[in-house]
Image (cartoon, rainbow, N blue to C red; front, side, top):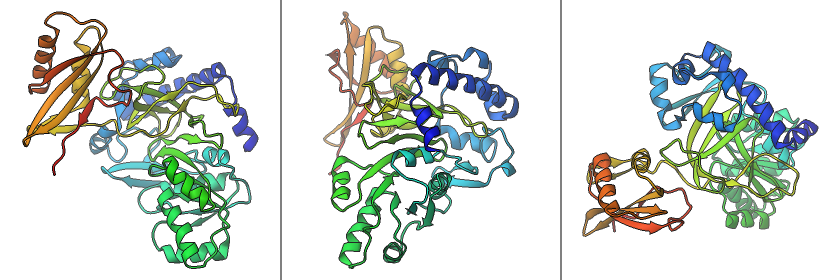
Length: 410
């Protein structure tokens, strides 16, 4: 298991791309034959023409925000699986609601993140992710079992009982949210129960900033983060070298400008779009709604896959202004109609209880009457008037925001 992981993680970039796109072609072809939903979405896509990352742009983006709509038309999974419902082990329910299939073995591939975190055969893993309706608990349990570890299914809540179980059963690994790990470690100290058997953890489900990581280390349990979803499985994971998050070996990751299909240069913050290489529940160019950016430096640990900075906020910046919804997709449409514009940002404010709008426009070359042209495009697309401020290139921060809501309601 460990040897297989290491071999895949240290492939050359060319070898990985070749393997990925050969497999992707097979999955595309299989999906267009066996999936009603993908046959409709992919339309005239020719699988054999998808040979590299640039060719991915021939495939339309499917947004997570549209999954509920797709699933209401073709229940329960939107016609996006290549197997019938009874093939899958479980059906899970996520907020939305969104329904996700659950498979067997290491269906969500969480074992890779666990291996990178040092989990081994013979470990005892204390799992505090939920086992009810959402798949997080099962995702982690399958991954741990796959590498030969035993799992204590703690789930959420019942803190006192969980601390007592840790005191008696002596698990050495933790999976769950970082905030609950902090609670366990602190309450264990307060109650004089021994929770020191837990030596390391793999956390997710919420942000774990450096300050919280430091606290957990000081409490005796250093942690790494994994980033995954019920739909895609594992997307990326940290290693002890602290060099960002490595993308899983079964996903192809792109970063696009929020609300558009424009692939951004490496280093630019944008929406995380993921293609998973899952033959039973494939997702092609699946826009997660999360922001991240690619790290380009070569890793010192020998892994060669793409690295990202982890979760950096939400890409869906939809907001309501003067009774009208304003969406990132609309800002992208305005940008597509303007020449020499590298970036737009709509600033939403409030003065004297009245909403204000200002569009920051980053240009390489300013032209006469350009502001008037932009104002007309804004009015036509948003049905709202906005001020326009022309700014120099690189003036707008690289944080992925295309709509910045600065309103306060004190």
